[in-house]
Image 1 (cartoon, rainbow, N blue to C red):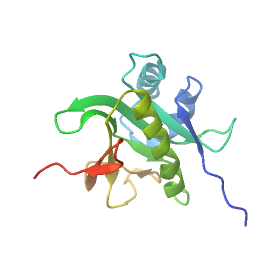
Image 2 (cartoon, rainbow, N blue to C red):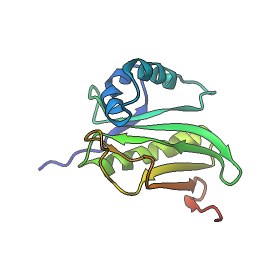
Image 3 (tube, rainbow, N blue to C red):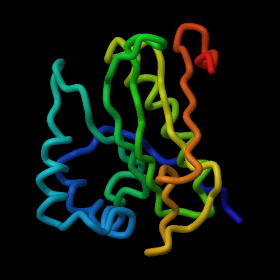
Length: 161
């Protein structure tokens, strides 16, 4: 059996927007195609002032995206400038960890480019299938674990309780 190479990760491209809709529809059924196209086009914007977007993972050029992660730049008093990934959605059960392992270094690179001091991710600690479909939703309303890591020390930030 041949090993599956890690997916490639890049910023959302205009051509990715309609290709991601099946994943969006399963994971976020309240979003219509029209709403998703509007949101996706906004997330495609690039430039020095852009503070939010989407990273997509895919298994090679010409292949549709197999995962996505939303991101936004923000600030909090404890962590400083922080890149936050709120939603990480993937279509793959068997390669889920490989996809996440590819997304994290891309997020670190992006955080450094955006001048962030830390990365905050939200992950689903109880890996359960969505009730509405076969896609694993790693960030849902229950069993959420937040993890913030300082870039300069690669050390997790644990806020005081």
